[in-house]
Length: 208
Image: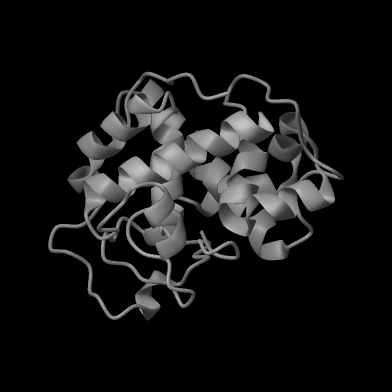
């Protein structure tokens, strides 16, 4: 989460992404999507919170496989797609549980102190607690906006921004954020289908 203090689901159509963005099919056909999926593996294309600005170094052994079971458990508990949660974690913190953004967002899912407190997260640097709070918050946004892209936009820019613009806010950072998370989710869904996903599973929860 950045601006606030901090898609549907592939291959299922998810409807309108936001004003001026059309449908997921439009996004899939866009040159932006082609660029993202063509360069996504092994590259950090977007780091909204610049977690490396924090004073804490990554934990030894940090990476997708280190938190695969925790991510899967947290996602399933909230009825979310495991690959979606994994994509959010990768975008938010790069799987660094000690990441701290310039704005003060902390941990794997980059929770601001106020948000963490409201979600009952006492230690945002504890991976399990951070994932529990972050997935709970993401679930609430999905229930509120009934759209994965809009929930992601709200996670990044805040619910008020999504409501103000009646869709994706016109912030380039937020639009880049949504594109990146969706691209990573799609990558991991393809990997899971091939049986080669490092941190996901073949199930898709009930994200809607």
